[in-house]
Image 1 (tube, rainbow, N blue to C red):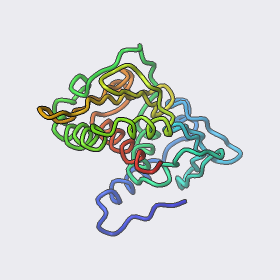
Image 2 (tube, rainbow, N blue to C red):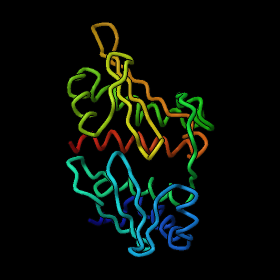
Image 3 (tube, helix red, strand yellow):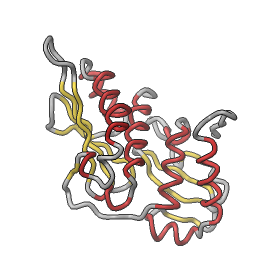
Length: 211
């Protein structure tokens, strides 16, 4: 399935830039650096994103689900997800986490992008699900997230293999509006830019609307 970009789509030009870099990359180097499995026979990478395994063709970046799944194939439905994944393949590296989780302000350059993160991610999550905790829980579970003890409701979801994000919600009342916190496994800081984390959360919240 292909996503078409309108002429005025702000994501089209950046994606074309990343696609050109992807097409010039060495697939064996990409595989060694990121952990994505490369198949010489099919000219595809196997990569798991939000719990769904995808086959991503090289060099044209066409995408298919590698296996049947009941989970939403967000990589084939959300254009920002494609940009995030192609950036992962051309720029990021596999890094091991220590089990520690970081707030957005704690990641490099997080303070610079915090206002964007707060509006696009924290506020959006809080006001979409802060007073609908049951819907939040059922939706996250359909995405394959794991329930954790945090806030009034909390879930941990694996974005790429070994990279985890925790969504935490506190419901509102007559005095206080609902609020949210999002934490990142510490290996994100070693492998991704701060703006990528905003996109990752944005994509997850978008994927929640697909279930």
